[in-house]
Amino acid sequence: MKVVQLSQTGGPEVLDYVERPIPEPDGTDVVVRAEAIGVSMPEMLVRNGSYAWMPPLPAVLGIEMAGRISAVGSGVRHLTVGDAVFVSARELPVRGGCYAEYLKADAAAVYLLPEGTDLDAAACLSNYQVAWHLLNSATKGFQFDSVLVWAAAGGVGTAVVQLARLAGKKVIGLASGTDRCDFVLAQGAHACIDYKTQDIGQAVDDLTAGRGVDLILDCVGGPRFGRNFAWLAPLGMVINYGLLEGSPDAAFAPAMLARFGDSVGLRYFSMHTFDNQPAQRRAAMDALVPLLVKGLIKPPIFDKIPLREVRRAHALFESGKVLGKLLMTP
Image (cartoon, rainbow, N blue to C red; front, side, top):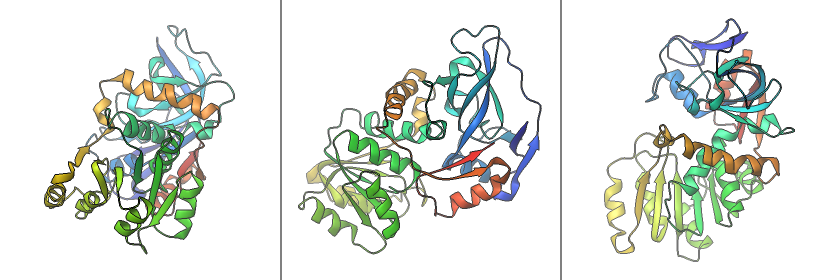
């Protein structure tokens, strides 16, 4: 079988498309034949060596795939050859393994999908798992009616937009350019602010009659992180879950303090919170799979690139041109 192996960190050129033996299942293992493989931000971070949870090298990249069971171990009872499944590396010993034509995993680590599930769409479920936890777990009882979503045209951003709209929230997206804003609106956002040409604060005021938004989901961080607090409604909250522009500068503290009288809040969030909580991870998937099957969430797939062209896939992902989700096919 073919896999994508990382032996040293760097740019897309360090990704090698190599041959390995097809694994055989032992005991409670299953082998999954991939049909669709997701391309996600954690793989960029592993490839460039900046991920805090790096797998030991050499490693096979990839945190998500959808496919069918091709072999089962003697101890497997609830899965059979031909079953459709989703695999997340969050359930595996290391964050990787899914950039491969075949993957061996413990049967308890894979998610069984109803027959007829669109496997391309299922390969996008990791983004929706993050989005679900942002809206349900990271808020931890926080009551909100409106949400401002940074990078709303990206994989997690579109998932947040769809899930928040489905939950009855007022959804405002942030994106760059008319085309990306049109795409965000098509995912269900009530409004989209083009942060390249519009004043975000003025636009938020106009859209909320001066009240501000209850919740801001920020994956950007960086030196301008503090600006978020000016856009919050009283008792509002900012959740930072990514560092696209680096760690939030400590200068955000005065901006937050300036809203002391409005009791605004801040939380940092990582999916690694649930590394030792498999029941919490599965709760999200148990909620999401029925929504996918019913067509209530519809992952927008930007393109499907052959696995052998993984270097091109990574370059495209990092170009900022991807709307929604990028997939690879074995």
